[in-house]
Amino acid sequence: MKITDRYTIRNFLQAFLLVTAILLFLFSFIELMGQLKDIGTGHYQLGNAFSYVIMTLPQRWLDLLPVATLLGSIIGLGLLADHNELLAMQAAGLRPWRICLPILVIVILFIMIAAISAEFIIPPLEQQARTQRLLALSDTGMIMTKDEFWIRQGNNIIRIGKPSTLDTMAGIDIYECDQQGQLKSYLHSPKADIIDKQIWRLQNVEKREFTKEGISRQTIAQLTLDLSLNAKQLGILNLPPESLSPTNLYHYINILQQRGQNADHYIMALWQKLSAPLTTGAMLLLSLPMIFGPIRDTSAGLLITIAILVGIFAYLMNNIIGDLGLLFNFPPSVTVLMPIAFILVISAWMAKKRSW
Image 1 (cartoon, rainbow, N blue to C red):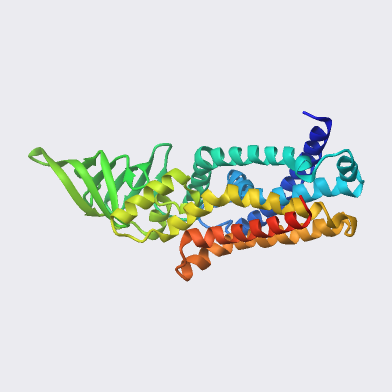
Image 2: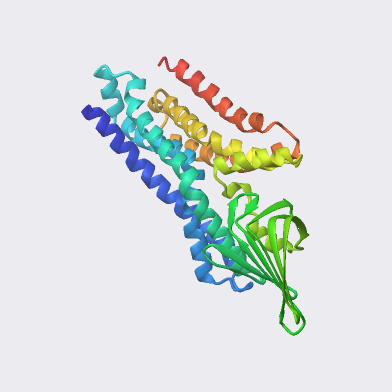
């Protein structure tokens, strides 16, 4: 690796890490302020708020990666340009694309790390954070252990195994008691499918009834029940699509479509997750032509300010555009990819203008 490559990478990484740290602190602080208003509700305390903010930190980093890439590139290369170091590299015969090549390699590495995290690391943390928050906030009558949920519903006690897939619970036990608290019947199913919110379909059901005469046993191949769980309990069992991995989203979309149910929200979430690497790459490509050319006439400070405004606008639009697409029934692929295509066109036009 050339000395110029190492020097360019070092300056980019210093700026990128500094920007990432500042953005994470800022948005985590805003998130914490939002959580503080819920303190005192149910069992939700300050420790729960800090725990939620920390556990959702990886997802926040993933959301901010495109903005951090844009700002890191502008600041890192902008300072080099301000010190005429980029001019010296070009005078030594290095083309602009060659100067930027090591940064592109580093960003690709970041994208690969982000993709792996989005599939295997971030979803479990996000789901655990949301579940613990909902349990602490609401008096749901639900207790969560490592592998299962326990719910008290009238005279019934229900044990629900944590989902093996998005629509299938690992197992379910229902203990029915009388008014004196004596066990009347016990029902067990190794597999329970959620058909439509309240409606659950139990497979290979074993039912036992306890009477004065003894215990009667019955096996039922399939049983449909209305468990009548309230909205808060369902919210704990059914996590939002934003907290799911791309693979689980794809699997769940197929299930919903097979049942004839609306899967638009999940499709939009899947497209947003799949397009995240493209957004990061587009932001990097947008930043490079901004450095090579106007820096002679424009201070690095002004470029950094412009980059901050562009980054904030892109971050807000990424959060808003999905809802707008769902509201106006735009195709998710068009809704998500059109802004990225626009950024790429602008980047290509600027690069061509700079005679790269």
